[in-house]
Length: 544
Image: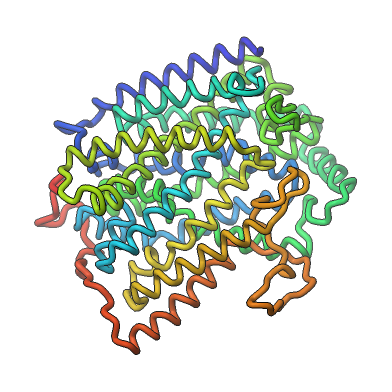
């Protein structure tokens, strides 16, 4: 047991726990028994709070654990996270402003609320809501993987339930203060999380190269490692087989980023369009941090860091690379601060994700199908209860899986959430696609995407199915036709499934229009997509 690291970790964890409970009184309205208040923080966060909230939401244990672990194991492919975050913000800049405006004008809390109003289709809204909840679960699980990697490094590396007990305790505490404070809790804690992360990374990127002989030595050690492996798809440079995978993975991840319900929740909680404009301009600063973090994977190779043996599975746990690197290379007190940064960096997004999933359940399933006349107070209570179920469901999920790379959880979630792009993102600009075309496209895209994921093995982890998201083009089979038979070139499954989704949606739309099938009633108006915080007659927060 690493007692110094554990003590510092517990002190900082206690600090954010106190902040989590205090947050219920921070900028609070008369009551939190309304989704506008509990689930969206009163829709009044300014530029700084929104920047930390969205940053804390998007830069998570994925950043600190999953990306460096992928670089350690697979090399250059792990750098896809850099272009993906760089191109994401220009892509979503204008659509996100329109989503904020129409949601503020109409009182929408979730993307599925918007779909319900845009197409007058509870069925389509239900599909979007269920997709959001399902896609969020592996993303929450990724946070758990990161937190558990830290706990294992500090000595909690037992098998069975005992090995997961510290994780369970951490999530009980998270569940309690999220239940009480709603979105205000992760918004306030995000300040502490980002300060810790910036301090740790700035120290690491100067200290580690100095101790390891410079970046040339670090890259040289990585090159030697990958040259000695039999895999043709790793290395410090891309090759002909994985360049397409790299490009499609970056594009697909960028398109998926703000389709996730937790990302939309962070945006809808902001005060106005100007706040979002400033944030979309400033958030790429996090991409610099991400690039520096990713290089820790190569630094771990040069330092000779090895993954810890997971006593629960009997196999090395690749997700412990960065925590083990800090444990090996830094004094115990600083390693404790780094472990706290990773742990808090997992809890903040996990809280936002559970709130977003709870909002979807409450608005688009519970209120739509189970209790149509639910009052705002009943909605808030239902969301609080649902957030608990989501958190502990994710804990059970993580107990039952053993991903080789935690990042696979996020990439599989990306394949799922991409299937909502036509119904959410495209619908912000045009209603040309028919609602039944969107339903048919979703069914085909989701079905094919999950099937392709099922067919991907991962021999290194002993998996025959769901072993990753990289599909060899030679495996594509369209009703017996193999357009790229024998090709080893890989592509991201999410892009393949999205292409099928869009083609089917367009074809069914043409057929529905020809048959004059009713397209559904659009309850939004053109001016709704441009409202701002100071407009006259703007719907009051908490009025519906």
